[in-house]
Image (cartoon, rainbow, N blue to C red; front, side, top):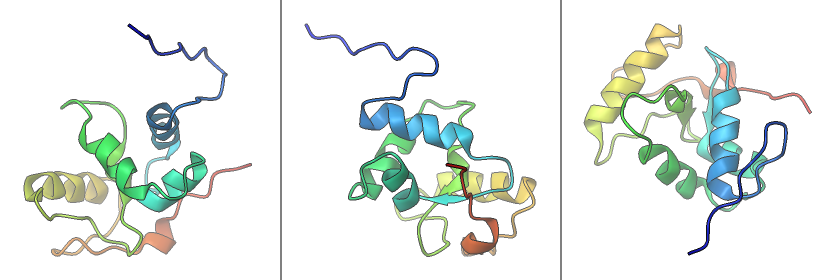
Length: 116
């Protein structure tokens, strides 16, 4: 059985999932990133849907700020996951991000711009 390589502190992640989780962890309170932005920063620009799949597979109660990742049109996606969309909207509002009742928000006003 093949085991995953352990990533040491300070070592850049080498696999997609680890890269996505490391990036999402860095998004500060009150800031947003799109699925495509996270995919591109992780080195996999053609995989925004897979970013969503990684985040949707997180365990309940995770401390990772998954709610700060939205689609590129500035929208909290709800198709097939309306209960998760309500939670995401609530968390974003708690951080001072204005989200309307349909899940629309101003992504560019809150866009995370990582250094480097």
